[in-house]
Image (cartoon, rainbow, N blue to C red; front, side, top):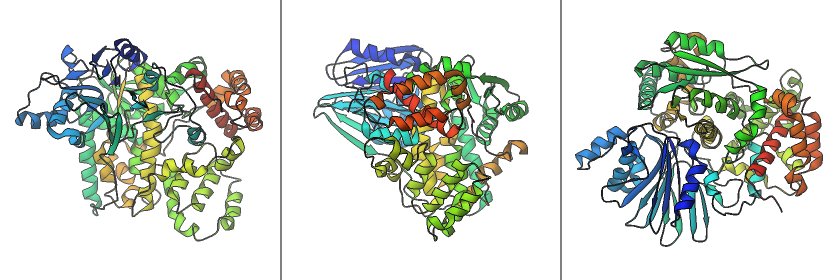
Length: 615
């Protein structure tokens, strides 16, 4: 894993400064390439071919194609053999060199042959074009800035900000961030800085200064190919094994993040089948009255015989290093899972440079509790919302109100998949946004983050999964993982996001995934082959990060002071009375603490990145 950067003019000092700003992504070396048309930078985390032959930017034999690459092409050896038969010769044992000659043979369609995670820029000096590409699931980011004749790109926004670009707040994304607590879509919170979308290529013509964006992969519809459950289960087992095997190829130690849940446990169990060196597994927990999952992770680790490590995160660590974490966000991210990921990554780096993870299992195999609501949507959608709302309000007395309200809203919007998932993912509701913002917000544009991902699916479950894959997984969880792990030069690999598994999921009858209220049914059935039933059958749990407790105990005065002096309030973008309401109640109600935390992250981000918020 690495960091990439570049721009369409020659400036050695500037490209070196960009490299410095993302050095944490590639602590093992750096390099740059310059000519009259281009400056390319690279910082290296050595994973394959640790010799100088793996140094980047890398050229072909003629020096006409130059690439700077971040990521891994897991099937590069297979592609390399095909290219060698076609007469190409290779100088290194890297996947980087394979990208160059794959492009030479197949042009931009080369990415369709890759199985991996990537963000790269290839400079075709003969055609005077830059070819940028981002992997199918958006594991690796590319940010870019274009203004008149200047084009700049980087793995992180920090690199782009080494240029004298204007750091103006993108007001269109403000309500979107507050709704989701991350920033889905192509735009960031800084005007004119955008993201190359997942599963897209981008061509920048150095002569015309024009950009062209093209999608190279997607799931267009569900196409059921497996009617027999046993046949489907065997195929899933085969795909899982191959996905894990591909992701343990490395010239440095590989470990595994192990929570004790189904996804990370099945990945770790298969990893143990093929990895012939010392296996390290890592679990994270909290010491603030939250039940840790150490018990379940240890059951799996003991069963597999790994060298298991348990790491505790506490409120003192969180408060003292919060500003440091904000600097690694790039776009503000109030997803609490970033916190344990960040500290666990630093710890794991002492032992390994690559860590497998179970991220993606819920989105690919239907693991979220809200999918179960689909059983009732057909019935409920026949009645007006007000008809059944009182019934749920009575039930809300014994069920957590916020979760109950989300269930009611989801059922009320049974036919509107985008709005349903917007409700699911939201921190601030539509009414809260309306009360909080001092200007009119077009909530339909907020929902567009999901609406743009409406497809011609036959089954509602597949539509909801697709939105979660494109929005929640790509824009939040994958970005959280990228920033948290690479803050310490650690590479995370996620076998359950192998694109073949994603495609396979849409070839299954939905009851193979969600069966009688059992989420991830087929994955659990395969899991019985590798794991104790106690692990396979245990109820899904998230991290349950006690950040509300930490904030009230360790950071309350800082949160209050920051929001009392809010840049957004001073510039009349948000309503001070509503902010005061959140602050007044944040130690009494997690609902208000969560909203205070989202605003606090935002204010800290705006300050750290020097974003101008004036109207």
